[in-house]
Length: 188
Length: 255
Image (cartoon, rainbow over all chains, first blue to last red; front, side, top):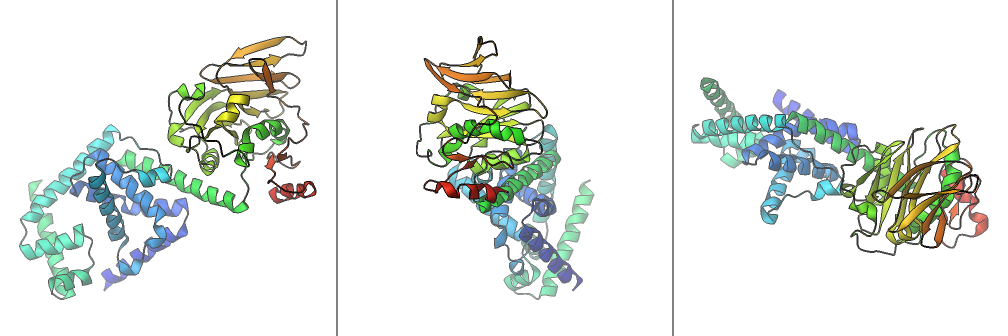
């Protein structure tokens, strides 16, 4: 129950930040979710420059569409990753870098530094290791962790999708994450 | 990605602030030529005639739409990131519809200014920082600049001289006429002349045998199409068809 309350609070917080309409509030929203969007890009196999473009385009689009976030429908991360997914699909279709929303907002392209490339390589390594470890989990746990952590699906949807109770869905995710942690710790 | 994360946040903040500022300006319903700054009262008078020639396109001349190609020598300058722009200057430029990705930097005695094309290719804006605060901006169609140049003039606080930055068209010369009557001709470098003259000197743009004044007297009367307001630094465009006895209401709205 505490998790649900906490998640509701998080959704309300994100909705408030988006509705505020100020640069400070959106910057707060951006800082809360930057890592999630970057991690998503890494999981999709983008290189650092591509990831930078998709992250910038995603947050620019999130600003433009900020009134479209409905906390009842899901977490802000899921909403953001939905936008990022569309951006990735657009890129695949156009075969070039999509900066349309950034250009609309007159954002200048951010040049990556050597530290950025190094940081992103670490993110990709971590994602790669986690992906390998995930593949080694039992099917049910793997599906639960994938659904919850990668697809950002909430527990009730996850439970319906797999035909189990919400408590069981939570247990599978919890056990799967514990197993992942153990395997990743062993590798170090 | 810490550097990228920080920089992107900064970019997003600027863009949002620019958008927010642009919306406020639009709600007032009046394109502003000068970003207000304290102690710039004298700038207003000097800029009226310059602004009228340069900015009236915003009211009546936006129909011209020549290609962006190098119609003006300043566009041969390399494109530069407009990182030195103040938030206010950026917001005002964006509201005017410029393409900031195509900015060219200009060195002036007041710091780095920028020449920025309008995004439909119809003209240019020139923005120059004012040491007293804020920025001076002027925009015009390419055709207008080819005939008259594009000028921003800034009078330093308590100064008795004028800093002029001029976007100069092809084959034009900027001529300063000194008190004794002698003249000095300045050829543009990279399509720009940046010069300082005393208040009682005059500066003209000479193209062939044609001359256009760039330095109107401080107490210049409003040029047709613009109203001068005595409370600030903004010449106000007069909407077409507005009866003369209603012009004063424009200034009231700006207070």
